[in-house]
Length: 183
Ligand SMILES: [Zn+2]
Image 1: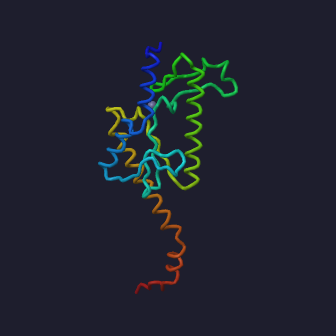
Image 2: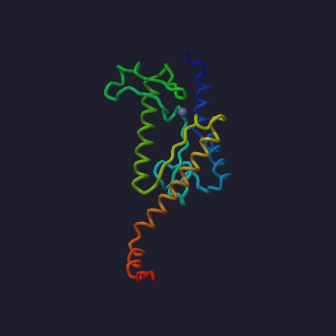
Image 3: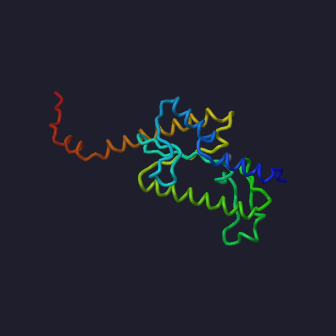
């Protein structure tokens, strides 16, 4: 059963939906403390990523588990009305029984939008990292932040290694250099 009054629910949802939500602040502070610098809510990029790290060509989205349907299984689109009982809630995303069709439709739209935005970003050459609210609870927080830092460093290395290998000029230059002859 859903014990919140409509007013309470509205207040909760508004808090979850607003800018500078707590999970986002955790990621910002955690990455800042590890020396990463970023821009916020980049308006020109699809999906207005929460954090944009240009040096790493990476966008970070900090997703609320409820709104973005973390680990939840939704009924097939072709049968939305008849199959509401097919919803499988997860630990961190429990779709209310009241108005279930409304919430399923809303969360489905959000998930589809996320996917589309990340596809566009990938086409533009951006890496995307999604951080989930449940990964930022106190017991998991440090591990999650370490893992983001690791991923960013890995991305940087990959990008730079690729440039060195595929730079044809340096290869040509190499070919023009006289071979060293060992005595
Ligand atoms: Zn979650």
